[in-house]
Length: 227
Image: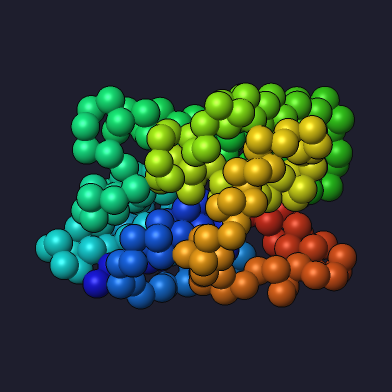
C-alpha cells in the first residue's frame, strides 16, 4: 500500500492521477496547507522542504519519496507503465517531464502569486510570468501539432503537464488559438483516471464556484506565499 500525502494542487494531482492511471492501491493523507500541516515535524520528516506531495511505499520497506516528478518516475518504474524502459524512450518522457518541472510549473506558479494572491498588483511581474507561461504553452502546441501525446504513448509527461495547463485560467494565461494544445487537454480530460485523480484529496471545484470562495482561497494562499 502506498500512502499519499497531498493537497488539491497541480503538483498533488500529478501523484494522484499517476496512481489512478496505474491502478495502484493507495491511501490518501490530506495535508491542510492553510493550517501549515506541511511545516509540522511529522511531515518534514517525509519532505524536509515542506512541500506536497510525498509518498511512503509500505510494500517497499517504507520507502519515502518526495518531489512530484520523482514520485511519478518511481511509480512508473515500479509498475513498468507510463514510461518506456528503453533509454531513448525513457529520456523522451523525462525531458518533457522536466519541461513541466522547470518551466510550466514554476512560471504558472509565479503567475498565480502575482496575478491572484498578492494584494499589491505589479503589472510587470504579472505580464512576465503570464507571457512566459503562454510561450511555454506555444511550445507544447507546436509539438502536439505533430504528436498525439508529448513523448510517444500517453505517459507521466502528459500527466505532469496536463495537471498544470488545465488550470491556465487561474493563472490568467490564455490558450486561445492553441488548437493542438486544446485537443490534447480534452483528450486527457476524458480519461476516467485523470478525472478521478483531480478529485484527490477532495473536489476543489465545489469549493471554488462562487467569487467569494475564490477570494477566500486566494487569501489563504497569500498567507502561505508571504511566509
